[in-house]
Image 1 (cartoon, rainbow, N blue to C red):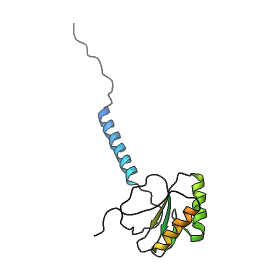
Image 2 (image 1 turned 120 degrees about the vertical axis):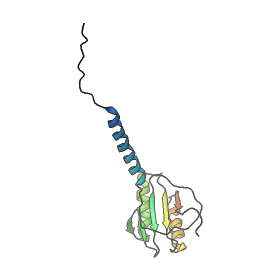
Image 3 (image 1 turned 135 degrees about the vertical axis):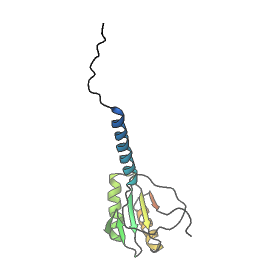
Image 4 (image 1 turned 90 degrees about the vertical axis):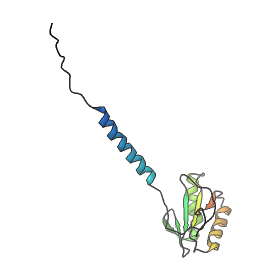
Length: 134
């Protein structure tokens, strides 16, 4: 009795497909971690030890010339407290992060901090660069 060969149907190699999908996944994960959200202007931060803030936050940037930006939008000092209160009213857990250039005057940051605390905004901190400067 002769052996009859069964015809095999077309075969799809899954190994190559899985390799490609893995590389696509790695690419997207790398892209997501590489994206950073920076709200505001570029500032030269002072050096100090501090804890890192994660997640959404309200960023108040004080430039070297004491110009103010709230989440990247130019603003005036008179409007800062009202705008922060409006943003904080949407989500009370949002912290306010004051990012001040090392050339900006200390008085501006302290006065804004005081005004925010007087307005009832409790989660306010300064953004710093960790480590010592050479």
